[in-house]
Image 1 (cartoon, rainbow, N blue to C red):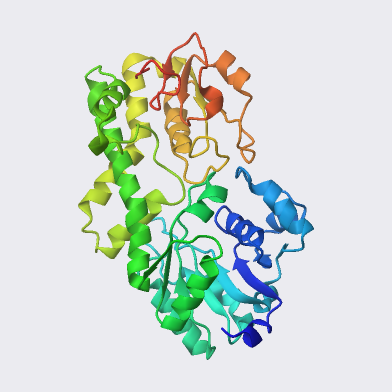
Image 2: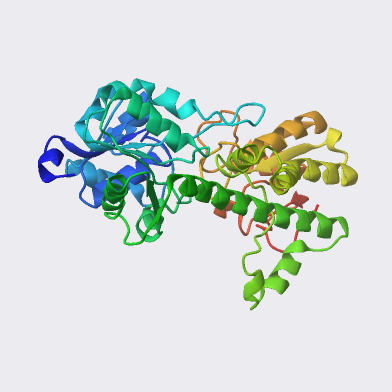
Length: 403
């Protein structure tokens, strides 16, 4: 894009859906690198928080950077979709959801874009950022063509982990893809402001690369969880075994510990890949059965040892990962649901989660419970000393506590 064309826009980029865990760190990162950034989001609460210099969720290091960007006038948030027309680059943070039957909806993104397409302008670059079902980039390209707008489409997938965003946005290689050379060069120029390592691909390659990445992690977690069940059923300490086999042995260094594999991406993207392969992805389906079945396994083993119907069970941690306040797709809630049918009472606590009115202070749960389950490996639980039985798949307390 020429300098004269760039001058037609008041902002460098707008992030549609930019008030969430993916879009907001990205907006802050670009603003930190000197870009002028708009955030467009339908959440009035998130927009108000951002404009007040407050993060709507936990992301270490992001809030001071947000406040600095606000003070410098490099970032602002709005619920008005019309602001999309003010920016040279339109970055869309809307993923492909799966329905109750675990089928992806490829048309979800074009439908969601309907509120902002009236404000698209010639000369903009449209960037899809969230994970999409393979072929969605091409679908959006056709949608833009039908609008008659000169607007290249790029797919540049998000690759960060929650709570590492403000480090990884600048350090990780960024995959960039577009159908045309001109679109690819513009995507490279945009993300080159964040990181020096860019990996160009075709859109279809990039779509699969993102799904392969998340599915590979999900399968590794499933292998660890299956190994845990095998060892535990024989009265053996999986964590001790894992520590021994990984010690100074690089070929096993990537074996993760056991624990709930959840969150908004891993399960969903594995199911998207299964749908893409016409449900012939036996490995992915097996991983789903193992990971989603871990809460049921824990309850079943606890039933073998305890009379749950006469016990109050306390669940420590309701977020989907340690150190997080994010409860999306958290298996802690599946565990609570199963226990609600088995136990006399179920109490829950979490030091970060603020959106669950049923949560109790940690001390209350520790005092009132007959049995505890560490469901999320929050750092606050490390070194916790209790005088009652604990199911600790994560081995947060140490000592290989088993169920």
